[in-house]
Image (cartoon, rainbow, N blue to C red; front, side):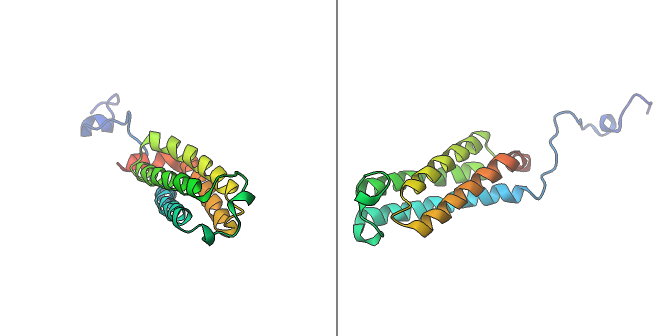
Length: 149
């Protein structure tokens, strides 16, 4: 072997275009995907409760930030829940579009939860916190899960 040849030429592997090994931060992306799926299930449950039991929530729908009846909120939360589940699976598969989608979804969901906070204050505060954690995990460490697949 001459000085001009590298060890990568002798093995047949090229260093060009290879991605770094995934780090321990990949766990945060898997956490974000799992949380999106879990939040989706929770939001769908909240949607079904809003559809079938208006008396469950703390305040009447007239005292919410947006004056929509609980049936409307139920449908909103069912749709948000389904979208969250789809995004969670996309994030865990390492898709770039899913990371962008997850950030947009979590932002919209946090705003929706904020407008619904008077109906169920503690739970909506927890949901907003989870949305913020999802945004953080996906934006800071999103690329690392791509190298796993």
